[in-house]
Image (tube, rainbow, N blue to C red; front, side, top):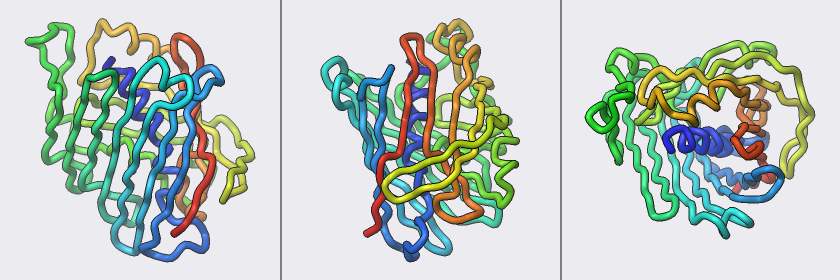
Amino acid sequence: MRFRRIAITIATLGSLCLSGPPAGAADGQKVTTEYGMALIGLIIGKATFDTVIDDRRFSVSGRMSSAGLGSLVSKTGGTSEVSGSLASRGFAAERYGLDYTSDGKRWTSDVRFRSGRVTSSNVSPKRSRDEKPSYVPVERSQLASVVDPLSGLMIRTRDASSVCRRTLPLYDGWSRLDLKLSPGGTRAVSLDGFKGDAAVCKVRIAPVSGYDRKSRGLKFLQSQTIELWFAPIARPDVFVPVYARIPTTIGPLTLQATSVSVK
C-alpha cells in the first residue's frame, strides 16, 4: 500500500498543472484546474485544484475522489495542499499536507519545511522496524535538502532542454525517494485554457528510506519508467506537469489536465 500511495501522490501532481497563474491572470486570483484519472483507458478518478499566487506567496489546495468505474470498486478520496514563499530559483514550501482515505482506511501527513529542510513531520499511521524488520527508517540526515511532492514538481528555468536533466528529492512524511528525470523529447499539448509544447521526461523511482525492502509494489515500480510532461503554462520560466503515465501491474494509470479557469 505504501508505494500505491506514493503512486497516487505522484498522480495528484495534477494540482500543479497551473501552480502559477496562466497568462492574463492577476496576482491573487484563484486558478481552478480540472483533472482526470484513468486506468487502462477507463475513468477512475477526478480532481479539482485551486491555486492562488502573488509576488511573494503561493498556495495550492485540491480535492480528489473516485469516479466512473473507480467509484464502483473502491471508495477513495482525499485532499492535498501546500503553501510557501516564492524563491529566486523556484517555490519554497513551508507546509505540505495530505489527508487520504480508501475503503475506510485513512492516511494523514503534515510536514513543515524551512529552506528545504524538514523541521517537523507528523503522519498517521506511522511505520517502524518494530512493525516490520524489513522496513528502512528515514534518517534525519536524509531530510536536509528535500522537496514536497507538489511544489517540488514546479521547475523554474528558462531553458526548456534542462527541465528533464535533474533529480527531485521527494519527501511526503512517510517516504524519502528520488525521482530521476531524463529527456524524452517533446509533445504538443492542448486543453481548455492552454495550447503549446511540453517537455517529456522519463522518470525512474529510486527509494532512499521509509519503505519495505520486501515490497512487491516497490520492486515493480523500480523496474518501470514513469512519463511526465512539463509545460510553461504559468509563464516562460516555470514548467509544470500537464500529463503523467504511471505503470501498474494491471495497466497504465494516466493523469491529464482537462481544463483551467481564472476567477
